[in-house]
Length: 242
Image 1 (spheres, one colour):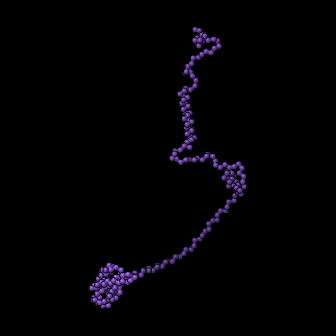
Image 2 (image 1 turned 135 degrees about the vertical axis):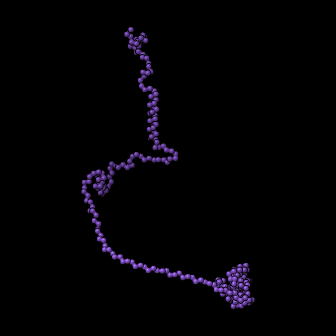
Image 3 (image 1 turned 180 degrees about the horizontal axis):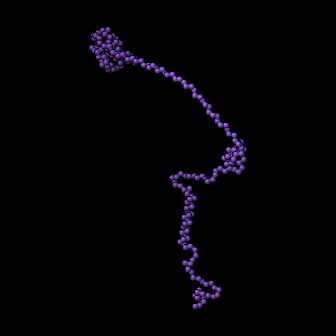
């Protein structure tokens, strides 16, 4: 066998000092495969998108939701380095040192304890006398109303005298006829055998009136007796001549 290197067997024309060309093999390439690099790039993009969504999510809302304003995550009051101002009396009392966790340097005198309650002696028992019963008062009896009985009305003697009993004076003749019907229903025995007499009267400025009168009575005494009975029954009347 020859001592010539393998790569020199295929390059007999190479001169001394020239580079030797190496054969290329894709399997011997250094670095990550393209698919892995592509997967890493996709993962990185997803991480960036997730971070952006988290940062801008508070400012995103639906159209129906009301706007939400969040406060800054910073203190709204910052004590000044040099407060200045006027010193307030008693502003460095012990109570503030205790609140800050420091031991007070002064001693406070506690207030005296409250006094003991006063003992009240029980009073002597009071002898109770029996209460006399109150006599029962009976109410006065309610007086009973007397029974009112109407007197027996008898018809006066009938006749054909000039004496009449006037019971109404109205503006229409028909009203006089209605009143006479009611009197006959209310006093059937009293006006039995009597008749109605309607007289038309012209009073000038006052107008025309119709006077209803009960006629057919024997005399003045009969007329007065009928008028008295009518008044007892609630009917106004007067005795007159035709």
